[in-house]
Structures are given as structure tokens and as C-alpha cells.
Image (cartoon, rainbow, N blue to C red; front, side, top):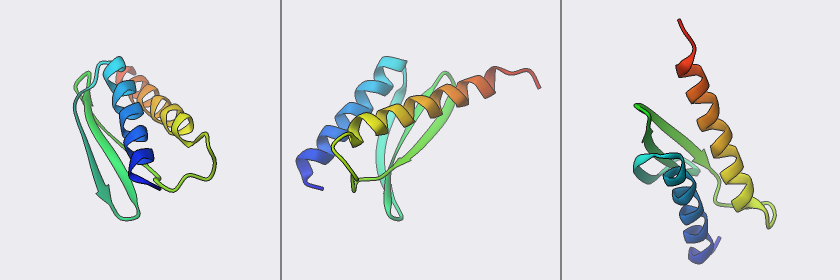
Length: 81
């Protein structure tokens, strides 16, 4: 994937997380995939994503997957133990 496409993906991820109220957003590389880490409502969230898209919708699909993971983590944290 070209640098511009990677930048587009990172910008979309950062915009999504900022909208959700995340702070300390940081991108990194581990193994074969990149990841993003952030702090959201006291939870450290890490989301791995691919940079080799299978189709033109990969930016939207990645943001969708990220939102799903954040929602699931927040739901789990809100449940009484």
C-alpha cells in the first residue's frame, strides 16, 4: 500500500477515536500488522489492522471493526463482576 493510502487509513482511525473521546492515540508496527493504541474512559485499547487491503472499502471496514472492538470493550468494562 502506498504511503498516501496508509496516511488516509491512519487519519480515518484517528478521527474515529477522537470522536469517541479517546486520548493518547499512538500508532505502531508489530509483526505483520500495524496497530493503534489509545486511552478511552480509563481503558487502554489496542487494535491491530492490516495495511494490505483486499478491496477499496478497507478504510471503512477497518473503522467499522475498530468501533465494534471499542463498543465491546466498553460494554465488558461496564458489566458488574
